[in-house]
Length: 208
Image (cartoon, rainbow, N blue to C red; front, side, top):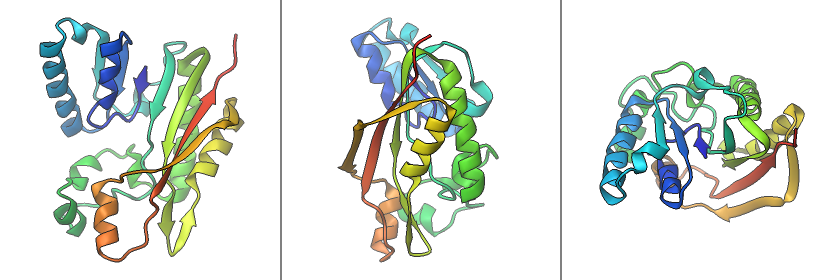
């Protein structure tokens, strides 16, 4: 199992059921949280750290590694969410350090919509190369509101992935009312329209 935008490293729990896990995270701050979480898991299940690899790099720099993973799962940041140079109102409202998280120029959350789509196409391609034959990629995607209009990132993600070679089956596409993140809650509190639902999409790579 591999999460290429791993955040706090939730996917590490997969090792508790015998899966080898790789967590890739661009932020040093979040990587350190993962390291602390791994130490906690090691106390619960001694030896489990041998099944988990933590990588503090942009996924664009680390991948591709051909035929490494059976499954990749991640939730891409949408364009512009972390475009901040210092402690602004969002940092105060959400208690999130967006400035720290946006330091790396390869962070997708700092990019314009156009650059985001271009970079994501490259990311999907790297994922495709990294997957073993018959492997799968699960995307957790949330549309957002820009200039009063809903931006359908899910549709764009599916189209880009299929263009690269993934297959898409609508029966493996689910929508749910996501609990959201502090950024969304802060925007809602200010009366700004937000998107509450989230898409979970499984895309598959063919056999050899």
